[in-house]
Length: 427
Image (cartoon, rainbow, N blue to C red; front, top):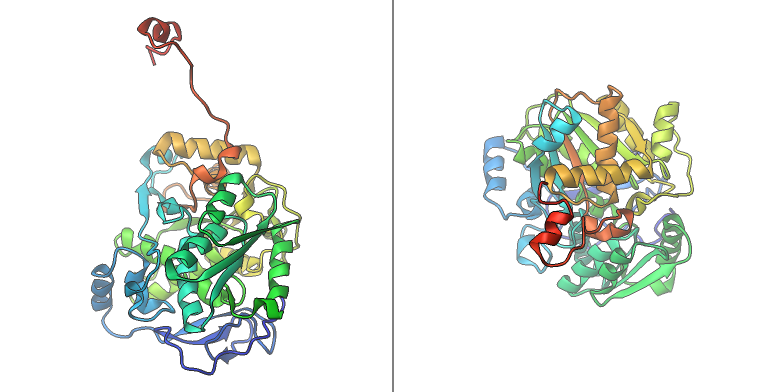
């Protein structure tokens, strides 16, 4: 990505405990503003905080008594204290499903959970990250929300903009799944298809930011990216709270840009630093589709550099061939003792069906990737089935219907005779 040309705002902004932007590479700090790359080394910027001090039990109680959405964690996020009173979609606090049926199928004895983020307002985890970006857009005076998207983010931005009173214009690859296109278009903003891959779309958006045409636009995953990324931390917060304020032993996370995985790790470390959970080892595993698996390939080859690829997979929401956070994913997987693995399209479809059949959860293709990778890691002896494991499903299967062929078991006349003749009575 190109360096954002807009200078940080010198006006005081209210983003709660957010104190500054800090470079992940060199550590240089900058004022809060709509920038995403370090002016010194071009490294990615992320939010640095003045987190609440004091008794962990008091903070835990404060969180538990908060709203039934991500705003219960407002003291740990770059948002104003009154964020829950503003018009927004209020995502979060989605179900952590104890997946005992799936556990039996996979041979997991230590407890298997599915964090099902399809329950968010636009049926994907992207509502979390967009909700945080909206507050940054308000703080910096933007009038239009935008993004480059593989589908889910486009819908989340369109919906959040409509609710919060922003204009929206979002950009997608021209060949997305029809369900995601409709969901992105229905909210009344502009939806623009770009001929090319997601990486082509992303490059275009980076150019638009530096052009007068983009003046007043907040690109949630470009010039607002440091704030946007913080929304993924709420997955870590919720998982630990729903487990009774304890860390999972193992967590399997899908990889697109890699930001979700890195921010989940950041969230877990923050909970430890605040004393909200006991500090103990945990492992983070990354999951990719074989048709777009540059991070998995780098991990297996022992490389620190992630070489870009051209995506070719049914898991379009993960089809980012040049993942910005890829190197950081490698660091986290190696540091925690995890791994990065990939599965092919047939295994993705099989895993979607497996999750639906065992737990009644219809996952989109990204969920098929995480379940499929979990199965593969267990079979290969990499993931320990005796430990508590959380698998992420980040979206609803209704968005990726083309991936799974399904239909009636039988079509019969409306009579008991016909039902018996079809051989279904004994089922």
